[in-house]
Length: 118
Image (cartoon, rainbow, N blue to C red; front, side, top):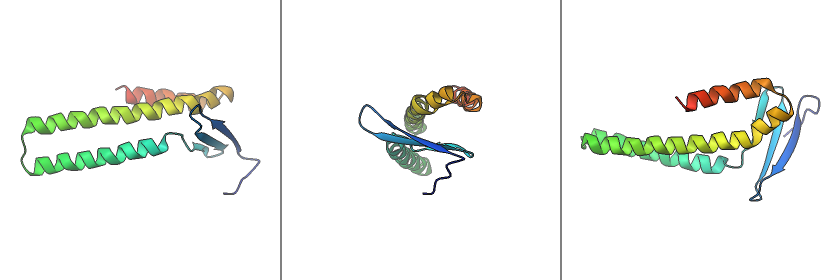
């Protein structure tokens, strides 16, 4: 990975559980690897599998109430994933945004929270 010293700076956090998180802030907004990315991706894969099985239930003409129960399970799982992402974002990005006085990042977080809580 090449570095453009004049356009980005990079810093590392070590979390309580020993996970290392490196952020790099550049002119393209900030991208960073999050501590919980693997957990989020695993949960999303399970969600996709769950949705596929619900789709199959519908195709097989299974009872509507069973389908609805499964859908509500997926909804709460999606909320769970969203919470992990939001907490992760608050622990890292928001701390950085406040330190760097990055109003745009804080504005984006507000929008994200509004969307999430709809």
